[in-house]
Image 1: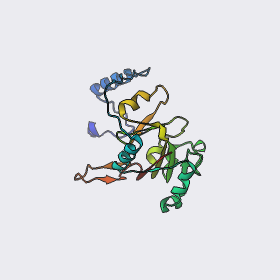
Image 2: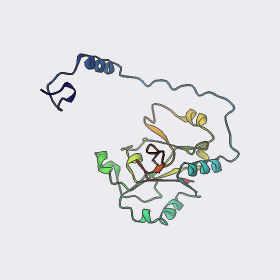
Image 3: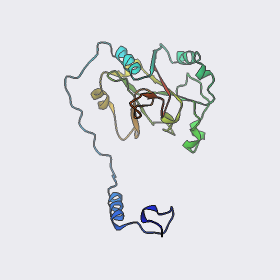
Image 4: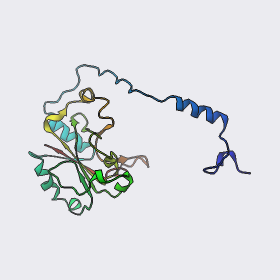
Length: 211
């Protein structure tokens, strides 16, 4: 006889009453409306004499690279100096001045992007306090590109760098963007023997350009 806790997928065996009761409660807890955002507390928060310099230092402190340019057209020239970029075969670019060859509008299943080499995307703003960049899926068909690409390039306007997270949080608006995140540095983990590994999951390298 098959053990109750080892039921084969698709089996007709009924789940336990306790489990059914739990699942029924979860199904009834569907949130129809967006919950209100918590209030942003005002106060004497940290401010930097040079937020752009602080942002640059914070980006590099979390394992990414940061370069200042005068115009977006300089980004492509800078990337051409890297062999990894020159050898890339699949590039999605949302920045017009940087060439790309992947059209997200023509891709139905996000799984088809599993071999994406580079993503070049414009962040809405950066945070000097911790080097984070706010990105959203507004006008983006597949938000998985932020996590599935090997190398990520984010572009931030110089005048769109705020001092701290309180200021950053106050800029967020719902319901649009419906999805967004603060992204700081490449993926990393230190779960195994407390040894830091960069690029363990998600993008291997993050390059930030300040325009």
